[in-house]
Image (cartoon, rainbow, N blue to C red; front, side, top):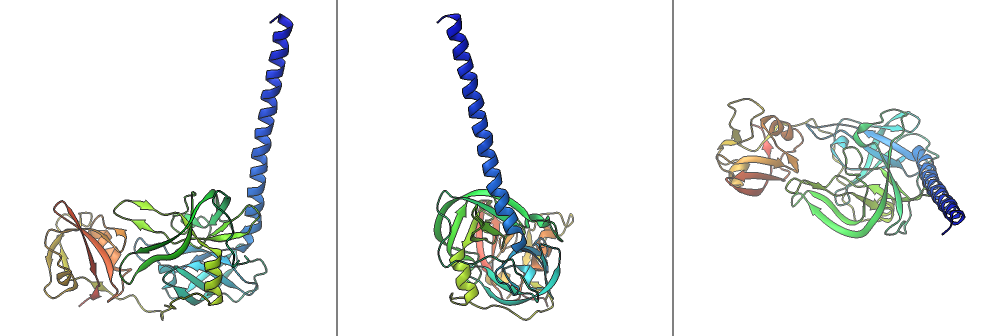
Length: 338
């Protein structure tokens, strides 16, 4: 090829590179634009929910507005069990909420505030979004917003629609029903109840409550789909209304005496088991080391004491103990402290 030919080739190559870069920039701007539109459209329909906490269990979550007269859809959690539940809207306005109903199987709750809420999500009886579709998850993960600050947004893709049954104990259901797996890391404190929307702002579902395996140290990132939400709000789902009257926290125990030499940061080893206690009935033994209670990791004596604050008498939980080299799982219901 002569010198003139080389010059032509170089110019064509440069032109193609510039065109490719321009296309990439245009694509990024287009993607950024649809994400920003979806976020802007959804933010006024979001709510931050605050309530009671217990030990390491957070006292906050996210909610979405689902009607023009103050209905707020959220998840379940300790934050609903205190004296009052506070809802903060996108403009920073604070309202005390009434708990209308809760569902153990889908871990949903429906709240009501006395306010007009003209910006709200429409709940669809039909599934929204398909496998491979882009979605944006909006939530108050880690309590980044407590007044009029916007909630966080995360971009992801729908991975799979499926059904699941996850249990902590015979009576404590983590989740049962239809769900949407997403490849965004949404399983964070406070994120449950957040909105998962399409690029045009349609509600795919809400971020599910944290499902955590203390044995594999993994969490599931999923959304409760819109049809399940609509059935719950409309009262057409088979739900168990487990709203309980607010009670003062009651001190509970398992009938376990722990080794306390060395301070509260020592591992939670069992010194002895009280005869006739829940621990005795569960066949726990001296020298067992408590690893987790109700899905919460127990690293030391302090963690054990804090975990008792979130438990209720006669409500069965799953406890995992290390016995020698073996991990032993027992179901145990605490009793009122004597």
